[in-house]
Image (cartoon, rainbow, N blue to C red):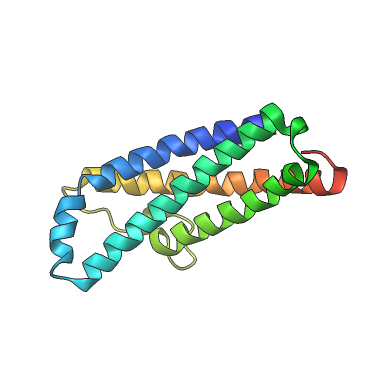
Length: 156
C-alpha cells in the first residue's frame, strides 16, 4: 500500500511542479499589478499558498510512504502508527485549502475557472492543479486505509 502511495505522490509531485513552473511565468507581471490592486495581491498570495500547500503535502506524503515501505518495521510503534493519521490530516488540509481557492463552492473541478485567452501556460497550470487535487483525493483514501489498518489491525 505504501509503495502505491509513494508512486501516487511522485505523480502528484510532477503535476505540482508543472503547475508551479507555469504559474511562475506570470509572477513578475502579477507582482507589478499587485502594487496597484489589493485584489491582485490577494490572488497572488492565495495562488502561492495553495500551490505551496499542495506541494508540501505531496512531498510529505512521498517521504512518509517511502519511509513506511522501507523501514517501517524498525520504527518505534507509536511513530509508525501515528504517521498515517498525521498524513491524512495533512492531505485533508492541503486539499481543502487548494479546493477553496481553485474550485470554490460545490465544484469538484478547477475547470469552473474561465480559461484566459493568450495565457496557455496559466490555463495548463489550472489543469495541472486539478490533477493535484485528484492526486490529493486518492492520497486521502490511501491514508484513510493505512490509518484503519494501523489502528485496527496493528500494521502499518
